Length: 189
Image 1 (cartoon, rainbow, N blue to C red):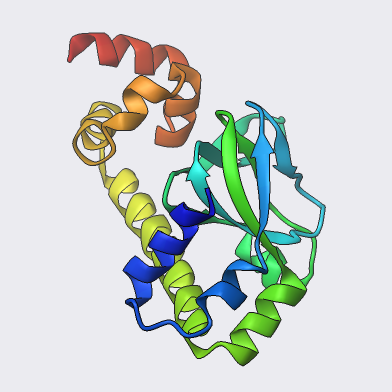
Image 2 (image 1 turned 30 degrees about the vertical axis):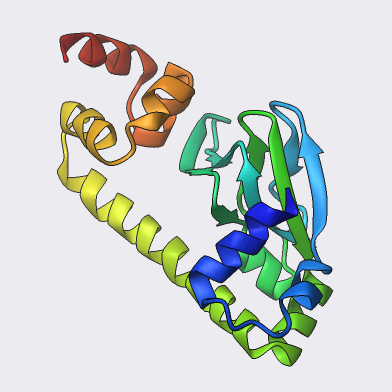
């Protein structure tokens, strides 16, 4: 499984990586089952996860304890609650496995050491931050201007694998649509 992470880093940074084995040695392999809680709101986020296999949900609860999904993160991507991870403050989001997962986790201390001692690792972190920010802004800006049906069409165009992979309830939460409305509109496609 570590080869998946190795290949990802090489793809991002190129083959000329003198410290690649040092970087990889700082990651812990984690196998999870479906619906395992990796982070709960209010806890300190201790890890950045690379998803070798599986799917994670990043979500929040509103005041009525309704769940809203901010992101669905699949293989070959990174996931964390970056504000908590970086600051050491309590997390405002939750992270849960949607499927059985094969993850590689790096803790905050190891992450900081890699940033200070391996120049290429700093570039990986910047890529994680940029992609997370770009995905969030794009999704928010796109979803604000789209009707419920247009959001479903957007998902079919830009993230089609999710439709067959995830429950209707989770997709509806991700799209910001009531589950019943989602089911009715989906049947119209």
